[in-house]
Length: 430
Image 1 (tube, rainbow, N blue to C red):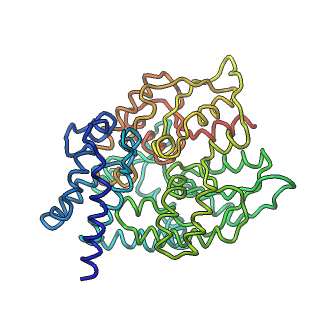
Image 2: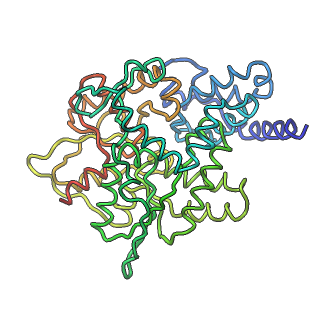
Image 3: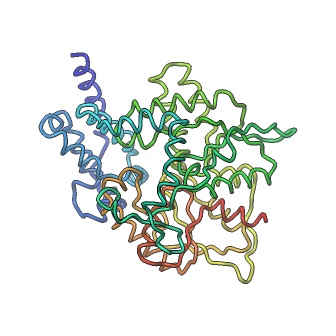
C-alpha cells in the first residue's frame, strides 16, 4: 500500500511539472528522433502527453510505455529550445524510473548497474579478462578510425564498428595518483570516465599530459565507479545510487580545487544529478555531492577559462579540423566556444565549421544499444555534415560521441579521423 501511495504521489508531482508545456512545437524542430522517424509520438510533446496519462497507461500496457519513453536520446535539445523552460530531462528520467519500478528491471541490468559498474575492482577485472578475448571475436575493419567489428555477434551488437578495449587500461598504468599541490598552484581531481579508462586511454593520457604541462597537480583515486548516467537513463536509480556512493567515498579522501573530466556526459552527471540523487543516501552524502558538483568542470572549460589557453595563428600547412558539439557539453553545461579555442591553440590545426554542428550525433548512450538502426540513421546525417566540411579530422569532447562518429565514418569508408579536442591540444605541446 505504501508503495502504491508513493507511486501515485510521484505521478502527481510529474503532472504538476508537465502543465508548463505549451505544446508550441519548438521541440519538434530540434528532436533528432523525430527528425529521423517523423512520428509525433517520438517528439518531446508527444512523450509528455504520454507521461501526463502515465498512471492509466502504466497499468494498461507498461511495456509499451517503456518502449515509447526509450525512443529518446536524452540529448537535451528539446529542453534547450523550450520557451517556458520545462525541465524535460528530469521529467523523462523520473518517468523511466517510475515505469521500470513498476515493470521491474531485468536481472542482467541489475547485475550490470548495481554490482558490476558500482564495484570498480570487479569491473576492472572483467574488462582485463575481456581485452585479450576480444581478439578472438572481433576483426579489424582496416578503416582509419581504428575500428573493429564482430559479424558473429551482430544479433546482439548490431553491425557496429567500434574501438576495441585498450590492451592496457588507464587504471593499470596509473592506479592511485595523489600529487602534491605546487606552491600557490592548483590541484584537480581527474575523472576519466569508464570509456576514458578502458577504451579511449589516449584521450585520458592527453589530459594528464596537459595538466602536467601547466603544472596542475592531479588527484585520481584508484576505486572510481561509473558516473551513474547509464543507470539513470535505464530507469535504475538504485544502480545510480550504488555507483554514486562508491565515487563519493573515493573523492572524500582528496583535497582538490576542481573535479575535471574529458567526458561531457560524466561532467554533466556529476554537476547536475549527483546532488539531487545523493539526497536519497543521507544528509552527509548530499552535502558531499553538492560540494563536488560545485567543483565539476569540463576539460575544455578548465583549460580555456581557468588556465587561459588561447588560440594561435595556424601554420601554412595546418590540417583542417571540424568540430561536433556534444549535446551534454553545449546544451547541459553551456560549453561551446572553449573547445574551438582549444583546437585553435594548436598551430597545426585550422578549424572549419560543419553544418548543424550542435545537432545530436545519434549515440544517446543506451539508446544506441536498444535502437541501433535509428541511431545509425541519425548518425548518418552527422556523418554527411562532417564530410561536407572537407575536414580530415572531426573533433568532439565526449567519448560516446567519438564512438558514434567512428562507427558511421567507418561504415562509409571515410578517411576522416576522430579525436578529442584535448588530444589535438596535447599534440601541440610536443
